[in-house]
Length: 184
Length: 109
Image 1 (spheres, helix red, strand yellow):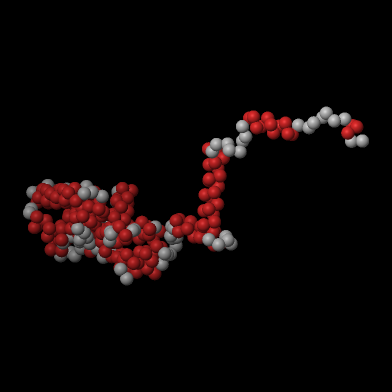
Image 2 (cartoon, rainbow over the protein chains, first blue to last red):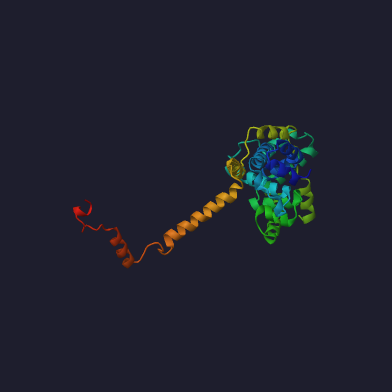
């Protein structure tokens, strides 16, 4: 049964249909939420809140408008993630750097790789909200430019501009780091 | 740094696995949350009300009643006063209601 059919049954109160949808997509949206907030504990909260919103008001999704369920739910997860980031107290949950340190191998090579990953994550999380979203949706979630633009609520040209600026910011940040200037 | 290097770095971005019981916890949490279906509740109430009315096609009957009520109100408020007679005729009528007191007791004895 496809996602749209499951949503019809969820609108009728079918909890089994909701379970199937959660099992099918929770990992994917956890990854999406993680890319929004950079923190695995927060990502789990975001995904749970988003799925509970879906269960509470499934009528928010209208398949007749021709929008795929996953595209629509990306918007829900993104909005929940943005709201959570705005309410977030500084350092209230384990940071991604601490999380990666837990997994770090003491070997130099892996330590260096983890540091690089931590630096990348910091750089991405430091991007302006919409640039970060554009990058996440187009580069990682596999959405088309049109779908990503719909999720963010901008036009396609604006989305392409956001993507370009995000990549430019990241390049500048890493070039400066390579030149000895550090950030964060 | 060129695009290729940046893309390689972005592709290698680390994303942790979700906890294995996350989906089960979400499903369990949703069991304690009620769905919000206000329109559906209203529709169900209206359907129940209509089913409770014993005359056939209650929607048609109520609809017709409403229409005629509106027509009646419209005529009453905005229509001309067809039932009110002109003044001259009112005077003639009032004469008909006045008693004739010219008789005396002898007329009855």
